[in-house]
Amino acid sequence: MAKQANDTPRNSRFAVKPPKPGEQVAPAQPSEETLRLLLRRRSVVANNMTGPGPSDAQIKQILLTAIRVPDHGKLAPWRFIVFKGPARKDFGTVLRKAFLETNPSAPEARLSLEEHRFTRAPVVVAVVSRVTENHKIPVWEQQLSAGAVCQSMLIATNAMGFASQWITEWYAYDPTIKIAMGLNPGERIAGFVYMGSTDQPCLERERPSASDLTTHWRART
Image (cartoon, rainbow, N blue to C red; front, side, top):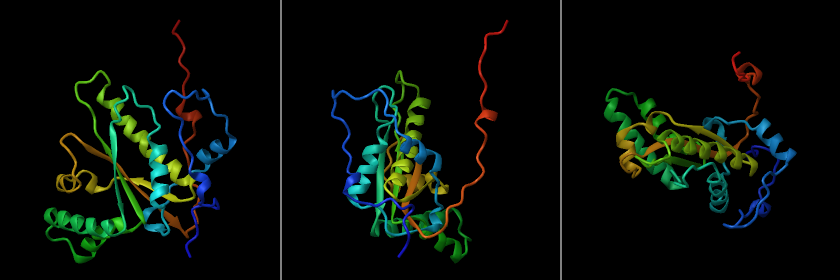
């Protein structure tokens, strides 16, 4: 049986409810455990994923967590499309056909690879960026909110004991795929978040130095 992404048990104690509108909440939530999770979070390559993946209830919890991101103007400039079960294989047929249309000489091995992209993990969630044009909230800020949703999904998935990876690949930008997914004009794919388990060791990679990337502004004299 495949190992979990970490040793955190997957049980009902993760069914955490968000506050209700108007409910008073603390301005800060001190949590050493949260900092530890953020510092140790690690993406797992989709090719290294296996089952089990999150259940429907767990997916709902992950998405409920993911939407609690900065959203200037309260526009909710994102939505989700979930692929699980047979839908992953069915969508693979769409991927294969679309790839073949633009790569008619592609060998069978490559076509098979494209056809099985969504079966690499038990669950794949597409995050769709849907901006409101000509709004006081700049398009760029709306798109950043969709990116924040993707990151929150990674964190929530990891916190529930599953492996995850946020990727795009060619099909995130293919017009035929966008139509097959039911995207509306102006909508774009912010990313596909793969969710599952892994039996592969996860090694920490080199990270940039925060101090090397930080400057402190001072008034010029």
